[in-house]
Length: 359
Image 1 (cartoon, rainbow, N blue to C red):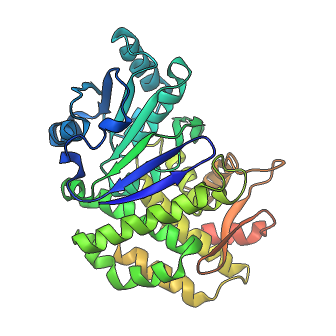
Image 2: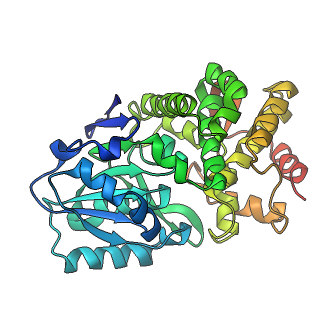
């Protein structure tokens, strides 16, 4: 087991990474108060992992609240339902929520914990690769709005994160590939050595080889922690973690959060960001080819959805949270491993990038 330390201005907590941690008896007990533990999960995930998680929560016997699978659960309607269930169960401030699931469960549970009675403790137990390397760490919580992804949320840090790579063996291959987009993102932003490693080992990750998975998950978590610890509330460098997301979120919004997975949309967003950087003369075309090749090997999309026009995509990008003074800002690259926030990109180059990847 590796124990990474998340040290933010508002709190410090451990990120446990290792095989079979869900079954490590009493691992999470030191983080629990003497109140009730409520596990929020989906029916499918709870059937797979709740019995194991009870070992880590021992001697507590948690209650279980179920929410539907899918991005549609990241909504105010589902938040309202979950809060109602907590109230009916008499959950109070000395109780703890535990998010057992992927990014949707983690975001919804975290935002519920931030809002309910002005703040509950919560623990992240991510069961997808995307959640293990990204969504569970750093304290971003949110639900979606019809006009924009993650537009309603709060910064609320967990009190612990438990990452068990073994649970990924039950993950559908599509979800595993989607998670790889966030792994590739860290390499592009700040870790050129990691990018080269991914080029050598991407098939091992797709085959769920334990040594490769452990390395990629730990490396990704370290990269995220190093960024977020200096910028907890995204006033500066943390915005770089949104490489590809301005494009990806717009794609998800256009599809009503019922089409591509988040990682699939982000994967294409990475390619669009690199392409735009090349058009601006910041990057060599050789790097664009390497990124496209890596995404292809991960079986991630490399073209926009066939029913999404470039005009509609550009319109939806205008709602991006990184706007300043009404102007869209994009995360671009000066070099492999050197990302920056750009607000003076040529609009003509952006539109050429979008057209190039449209059907």
